Every structure is written in C-alpha cells, then in structure tokens.
Image 1 (cartoon, rainbow, N blue to C red):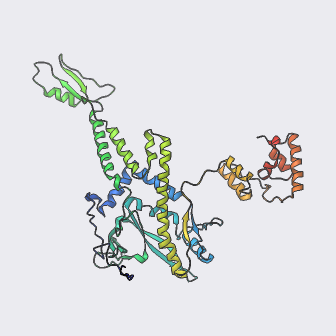
Image 2: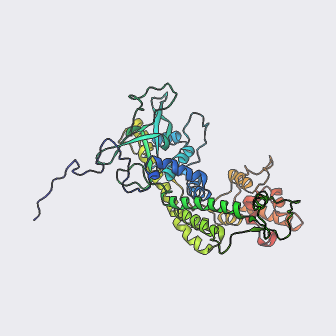
Image 3: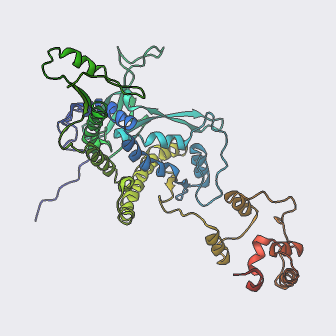
Length: 465
C-alpha cells in the first residue's frame, strides 16, 4: 500500500524562473523583430500596411463587437444585478433593454470591447481599473483605462507564473511624479485587467494572431516591390539604339536612347542603317502575381478566414463548411473576453461594494452567427403560430425596419379587446365591405379593427393566398 501524501498549500515547482521580472528574450523566437517588445511595432505595421492582414482582423473582431452583450443575473440579488448593469451600461438579460443615458464621463462597454480585441493583434492588452465614489457610499466604475502595448516597459511575473504588475515607459513632458529615476510607478495586478491570447504558462505577452502570418507578409511585401520595379522598368520596354555599320560615335546613339520619351508627338530620326527599338525582358518571366496571391491566401488561413480567398475564385460550398470553424473560433475569442471581464471586472465590482460572499452576475453575449434576419414571411409565420403578439412597439419597429411611414395619430394602438362573438361580427362586417370593393386593410379599419393584428382572421378567399 502506497504511503498517503498530505496535501500541501505551497508549490514545490515553478513556472517563471526569474521571479519579479519577465524574461523578455524568448529563446524559441528566432526572429529578432518579433521579440517582445519589438513585436508590438511589427504587428501594428502589419495591420496598418496590409489589406489582407487588416481584413482578417476585422473579420474576427467585428462579429464580436456586433453581437448583443447582456448582464445575466446568474442568481445574484436584484440590487447587485442592477448596479453592475448600470456600471457597464449593458441591458439585463430577460428584461426590457436598458435605456442608455449619456455616455460622457461614463464607462462604455462597446469602446472597451474594441480596445480589448487588440489582444488579437499584439497577443495582450492591459487595462487599469479606475473607480469613483458615489453619493450612496458605493464605488462606481469610472473607466477601464487602456494601457497600450507600446507603452509597457516591463511585465513582472511571480515564481508561480502569476501576474504581479506592469510598468510603463515614463511619460514625457508631463508633471507626473515618477517612481524612482526614469521609471513609472508599477501598476499592481489588483488594479489590472489583462486580456491575453493563447499564452504559455507565465508568459503574459500572449501570442499574436498575426505571428504565423509574418513570413507571408514579409514575402508578399518583397514580391510587391519587385512587381512594381518590374512594371516600372519593363512596362514599356527599354529603348535600344543600334548604330549603323562603320559608325564610330556610339555616344550619340546612347544619348538618343536614354532621352527617348513616349508621347502623342514623339518620334526618332535615324541615319541610314541605324535602328531604334523598345526591348522587353526575353524568355519566360516568373508569375509574380501568383506568388503574391499565394501569400495572401496563407495570411487569411492564419485566422481561419478561408472565405476571404474566394475573391479570386473557389468553392463557395466548401467555404460555407469551413465557415463553421471560423465562427467557432470567433465565438471562442468572445468567450475568452467574457471570462476575463467576469473574473476581473464584474466580480471586483461586487466584492468591493457588496462583499465576496454575495453571488455575482455575469456578462454573456448572443451566440455569434445565430441571429437570423427577420423577413416578412417569417414574421407572419411567428404571428400565425402565436409566438409573438402584435402591439404598438412591434408595429413601430416593423415600420422602421421596412422604411414605412409612421402611423397616423388615430392609429389603432389602443384598440379595445373584443370577445369572440363581437370579434366574429366585426370580421363578418369587414368581409361584406371587402366584397363591395373595399381594400382589406381599409375594411378592417372601418369596423374598428387593426389591419396588422386582425388581417389573418379574414377568410383566404377575401385576401388571397
């Protein structure tokens, strides 16, 4: 029988062999430009200078920003749920949508989400929590202040791999008090929110989504320069002047060829036996554009964005199948942001104001790709099935969606509810009017019924299929 092992409350091993500091030199990264913090500037260039790189990032980030984000009560008290929803300016799931107040001086979750998604570009994105005291004695979230990757000078990591603090380069030309000589005050982990993409244990720089695309970006950039140079040098050929036999003054023919310019009235005069021609590159030329297209395709694959490669042809059926993998990856990025926000924003708000034993709500979002456009036919199907009920708000929404004019002041928003017998009588009266030449909608209005609400009650023979 094996000896029993008593549980321990401390770690024997370690993650970071240099506690108190982050080893900035990654032994597995062989490209010096991609060693942190140099990598921050390279990845920013890639996003700023290359259309395909920018498209990949936009294809991933826009669905995350576009989907609906909510506060899920998650069993928390109503007071706590309302407080968190007001701080984050998000609606509470299962209730009417939050009426947003002015955003000046208040936290904007949409803007925060945009900044947080920079972790895809750089591999990491840090924020500092800033609160303000309220008149009710509670601490309100004033902002999650971004700490740009380009400003970070040091990431301090504990022996167990946990984040301790970050330090920034000293701000220039400001009156702020600096910590020590030429150093800014470290921001402790208790005040930080860290979004990190696919990190190795203890490596808080994460892994940029653009890292696998780097070599393809370099090659594409070089190929495009070669292509531009080739077009500039050989687009119209190289002028070549051949002197006639026995001509000894070759210089004037070289000057003639060098000064040749094309134009509507351009021309060349030559002596007998001399020759002037435009020569292009001889032999088979490499297809530079094909090589550029290949690099473009590989860049798109780094984000699983296969559909971006359909701009030059391809199987749309196959792309729709591969799109499922892309949507799942985007969903995963959204879940990663939600998990970090719940752990280090929502729960911090609850702990500070209500205590650590109080249940906390959580941020959730609609599944990406699950929302379908509501067509008029599907709208009617839902009404006929009794899944939704027409009211004034829904009518106004429908008018806005389809660009219809606003309802007249005497619209039927406040029509009384009729019992079954009276409703049948009014429907019958409307049918009589329709047979006499009235339009169905006008006939329903004439008998005090709402065309949108009661049109489906008319016999099909009166309104058509």
